Image: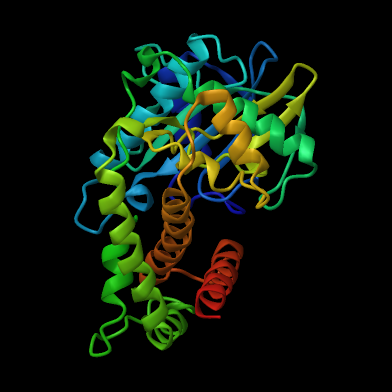
Length: 330
């Protein structure tokens, strides 16, 4: 996120780090990187650098009626799976440091899940295309190592329930008779954009539901997945490639990690099949491509159905939403 959260001041964060990890903060600086979680770099009293993330639990909910505790449970399970992977010998996993109580994160201010990580020096990348074919193949090797990990790493992970986060809010906006709250500069613009493009979005939702039914009929194909192995979640260090941001880890079909790695020429999918003996299914690749677009749209719709003030993050979200709708409706 480009701006720090209004309702998580640094004093609260510093207190949480002391309480949860016995870390005494000497300096703290917000880092506007990524999009979804908030990040800080800290230096403790001993001069050690750390990286801190905070996730707003209300935003992580899958629906308006879901309690924040459910979002916290999902986040805890995903980060615990990352810790288990790291402990199993997958040293490329940048996993959270356990709290004093052995938890992968701490709840702070009743609204945020906070996790602490070692600070990693290395080359970072942005969302988009892989920098080189070698980069893409390196990430494939990491994914294969995750998917073939021992069954013990599944012990904390939740299974993918195929929910599209905030789908209820997305579908509600198609109601032309519903009053649109004037809760920010993008509220009415979002409503108009979605209503004008309702037909292609609803077709996409229907296709997604068909593919989910197909996937549920094949439960034996599931593995532990990262969920978002795009370039922005990779780093290159002196020790090799790393995979970061494990807040979406789930037990799911392997295509959840493969659709974004697929270069389009079949080479990545063939290499995966050769290494694992599992042939990726075109229908499941389609499922997760659709899921990505629907989730992005629904998350941004949810953002603009609530109070917002035209921040840099709001502007970026509107750009994402407009681009996605344009792509789907083309």
